[in-house]
Image (cartoon, rainbow, N blue to C red; front, side):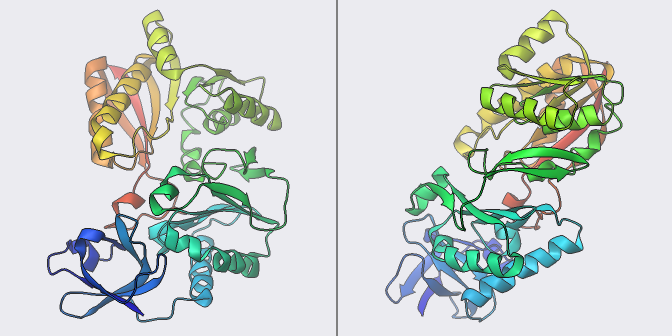
Length: 391
């Protein structure tokens, strides 16, 4: 067994449960380093810290899988996945859910989404890639699924010395499936949709709009495949317009509207939200409810300020389109923009727009994406509903 010894001065987060160990926190390694191999980690005083996998090509040199002295083998992964599934069942997420949420489920750099009988996997580190056959085998044993697909077409893998790839991990199947959510049906394109094909993290938040959209004229920007907008129509909106820059996303959104027989209420158009919101605000267009659900604006601290400026700008424009007493529904999935900073940014936007806000809802992601205290990257989604009034 390769042994890794930490420096005396290391971040408290390691002792407090964080699984990441950076290269500059390691004093020495005993044994020949094999990329992706399981290692034992010890503190400077030789006390056992935990076991995980190592990658000398990554800034995060070791990711811990356990704090116990236990064997990491196929049975280990089977038990971890079963434990995570039992947790989801216990909290009420069974049909569609994030089955494994990386560090939050003590399987760092592993994502597994469950879409009824189909599973989508992302192995985002070299060490987790090594165990992909064991993970696939565990899914087969626990669920006997109709299909398993990998969506490893993500740039972060290249930082680990891995290639980007996607494809079947089971017998091939039709990757265009239909799921049920909150009494509605949605097409999911497992092969070509964003991330794993569908954003499960907003499934609870989509229910949160049901009272404010009744008999309302609603505008949705950055709509992707139209989930929020279709929920709004379902919950009694008078009219709903969704806009997204992607022609493909808009086509999928209109398809979803037709699937739910709501195309007479909700319509989607391919437009650049940044440009359109600005123009429509100047033209004096007004809506009862404006919904903003943009993609992540940055993944790097170097461009964090630019992202904050972007959030402020789109929310300012959004507020200007809300009728006095109407509602703004706004989200951020940028991990580096923590909740307090997000709320502060919205407050600055309101000040510049000459509006006062009354908070109705402030949520994180659905509970199948658990937030673990001390692991900042697990607390990434901010979802806010405010009433917007003139000062």
